[in-house]
Image (cartoon, rainbow, N blue to C red):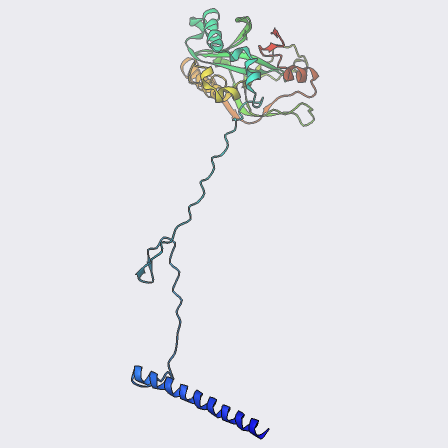
Length: 317
């Protein structure tokens, strides 16, 4: 055991001598390379983080960047989906339904206007033709009827034109200087009315300041009501997407808004030139009241579009 203990002490002495020699050799090498040991005491080591360059910068901390910063391209915005414009009160209609209207057929509107000009217009009374429209007339019982409306220098002519037989069934002539007021606005019903509400706007014209009696209002066949209400034709929705159907004029012959503008201008011009002493035309922007409460016939009539010249299952009327 004494020999083993002596050997362990010898190995420890050798290892210690070897470690000391390695440290001496390392210090000697550093002294040879630097000319002496470097004293780092009191030296402050500071690390600076460079500011982040903007995405499109080519210089980074004063030196040209080796890697270009790419700007992420924004995804192209998708175009909004085009939807049919809602102007008339009937809503959008399909191509098949539109073809059921005889007025939708090319040339039908032209023929109706030319027929009315030759058979109804009186140059000495009416003057020159200013414009023509195909509109929806709404009577005092809320029933819709297809009407051809011609505006002349002196008169407004409302025509019931049969597009199936291509002939005039009836018409009425309204002298422009007799109109007292013209109103345009959304449709409105009495609060206790159960009739379905209409979309779009209407134009109402009055040619008498006399109040309508109760007997006149409640008679569905009364034709002496001193006012008329018009709305855009149901085909307005189709024609906005297929404008080549009508090529009569640039006055948009199915749109009640353009009719309103022309009507007001025509009335004011006629009064100024022919009857300057008459009171000025009262132009109103406000709700157009339809005093209909519970007309079952009007509901059936409007739902089936009985007031329009249409093809109905092989039968046209």
